[in-house]
Each structure stands twice: as C-alpha cells, then as structure tokens.
Length: 299
Image (cartoon, helix red, strand yellow):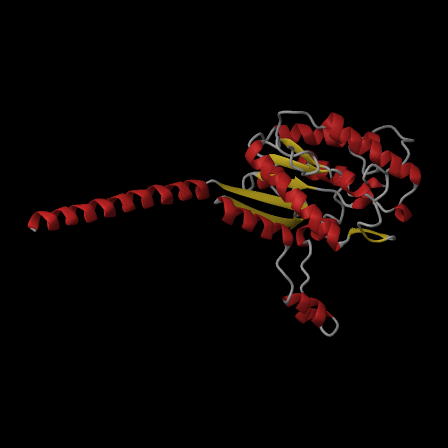
C-alpha cells in the first residue's frame, strides 16, 4: 500500500514538473516573440487620415450623428490601421506598434509634404536638431524601425518643365521631383537599420487636374516604381496611385469622397488600410517578398 502511495506521489511530482517545464518553454517562446518590438511611424496629412481611420462608423454613431456629432464621435469604432495591427499581434504573438504623425505641421513649417519638403527637412537640413519644429530622420530613426511617408494629392499637379531642374526649388516638376527623390534615396540608404515605405502619390479626381498634369503624374510615379526603387535595399513601395487609378490617369470617382473631392471615401479607405497593413507586415517579416507593391499577397 505504501509503495502504491509512493508511486502515485512520484507520478504527481513528475507530472507537476512536466507541466512546469512545458509552461516555462511556452512562456519563454511567447516572451521571445513579444520581445522583438517593432515601432512603425506613419507620416501623413488628410488622405492619410482617411486610411488611418478606415470605416469607424457604427449603427449608433450613424443614428446619433443626426443629433450630436460629439456623441456620434464617441460611439465610433477605433481607427482601422492600429486595430488591424492589434488583431495581428494577438493572433501571431508579435509586438508591432504603429503611431501616426501629421508631417509637416501647418505651423511653423507649413502644410506641404511634397518631394521638395521631405528633401528640405531630411536632407538639406539634416541633423540631430529639429528643423522648424519638424523631426529630422536622425531623430525619427532612433525611435522607429519602419517609417512610412506619403504626399497629398496636389503632388500630382505637376507643371510643364519649362525651367532647368533645381533640387532646391519647390516648383512641382518631374525634373525637380527626380533630383529630390534621388537625394532622399541616398539619405534612406545611409540609415540601413530603418525600413522606409514610400507611397506613390495620392491621385487627383478628373475635375481637379488637367490632362497634361495627370499624364506627368503617371510618368513620375511610373519612374518611382520602375527605376527609382531598386531591389535589395531598405526602401519599399506601396502603390496607392495604381489602386486609385486602376490603370488610368485620374482617381476613379467610385473611390473618391465626391467627383470634386480627391479624398478617399470610407469604403476605399477600409480596403486600402487592409492592403497597406498587409504590405507593412510583409516588409517587416519578409522584406516585402510575399506581397506586391499594392499590398496584395503573392501566391
């Protein structure tokens, strides 16, 4: 009887030890995955805000929207893109956090985020001090491992190249854009531990752009995708322009806020937010090899 009790006791002790060992390794694995924290920064203005938010509406926010915008706002869902990352972290035990930043701010720099402005802040005025209250890449790269940047849709209103190219000019021409992009690429390469995700320009609806401007915009972003972007570096493309235009030169109005407003509508924002998030995660985990430039998975 004593032998049986001792045998049972030994089995209990061994079982308990096995449970502790298994729990230790499971916890250790989870902590290993969780410990690899990746911080992502999304620099944007209003079109980026559409992407960030996606579809936040609910039945109750719509209902109260008729009476009180303040109450309606409190009843909305959380923003789309950070919600997608939280969901992914929970499912795959990753530790990816994403922040948004208005860049540049309206004051003191001014509400301009075109090729000249990124070049002006990050290349021409590079360093460990802010420029007109805007953070340089030296500052941002110390905090973030992935930096996403975009231009507002007026980037597409590209003018005729009647003047010689000037890297220090804020005139919207293909020649100036190319010089500024080449300088930015060199700057990005100088920070190899940071991954940069560059949006092609947000497109304009037909009513807000001339046909020659729209043609020049397509030519420039085709150059960005096919020539400026080179393989096996730390720069990746997210081609929002092709998602918006679907092979044309204008923002497809079924995706726009209105025929006269080039902001994204809610349905397109939600779809694009998912594609962007998929692209970012693939860039982090696979150097962008399992998605195309639009964020669609490669089979």
